[in-house]
Image (cartoon, rainbow, N blue to C red):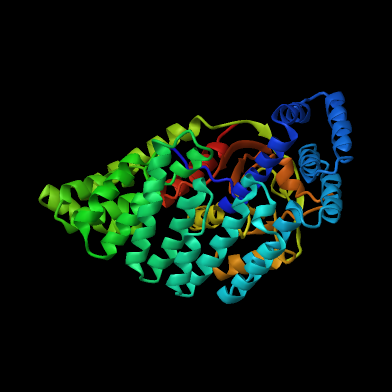
Length: 492
């Protein structure tokens, strides 16, 4: 089954790091960066030693971009302490530079009150004027503007929210900014204003798919097209204009790279409203067979079945055949993903301070789920993971461990515990906190590059499955995890 691939970081964080890297690449020289990358990825220790020498030479420079490059590649060499030291000294050497600017903007992001947030934003840009930084460093200001604008949108200040949304200047990020503000306006009932922003975002994404596809960031900008079409269609549904919603939802459905339960749900709803029951049934049937059906679709399915077939006769057999097909497809896809790699043992403390080791569960099938409280896709996957945990709760040979990692706050343990308790998740949470070298050791030892990432480990201590991301379909997600567990239990 196809999955949406989430890296676990927020889009803002990902883009900020990519943009900073791009800027340092340009100023350091692409050929030099390629050489550094080659040396960093080499298995020859002499190459890595050569890279270290070159990085220390960079630190003789008076350019902050050289220092940024040195810090970045020391991280790649797993010398986090050195990289952190460079960053610390770099902030002192370049007090009005990129490092300090990106650190100070956190005060804007953390403030909740829109008026105070705006005041902090204005003070920040006064200290770090946009014109003092290169063109490819401007997106940092767009992130800050977006933060202020969405705070006003949440506070129902439509006028100011729109002003900030329209300040966003980075071409490839305008659609994201407009749509993010539109989403909050839509939730607060400002449907006209939300629709206008969604229209702009959709038109912008379409341009990047077609006439502007060779511009920087075009791929990222274009990827939102299906989502913006769906969102605009959902506004029209709220306004009761189903005829206007239908072509947008059809376009969202047809242009989506995989079956998306949310899109299919709105599309089926609009079809039902205009009396197109057969088409609505087909859309729900498609989602059901892919394990992507929402509760609303499941509720409508039986009614539509009777309308389309003339009665409910054969409905139970139909559902049984759909479930059988789903399981067969999942098993077929999962069987292609099986691996056999020794799992690294570890010892971590749970949220109550008790030490837990992977080796404690020798002979059992163990599911590791790497997550963080700040990771949206991680939390989106938790309802399905709860269902998976509950399915195996009476099986003494299956164990789930939820490993919180890549923490971004000093009280990460308290936050993780509070989040799980608040949502009544029956999860055993372990804390993969930073060590003295500034690394999260367990996530690093498992070579995780994005979260959520899950591992299924067999009774012999071997990793049999690794999968990253969350598809959004609860039925498919639960069955995939269950199938992996069953296969791992039966491997030799």
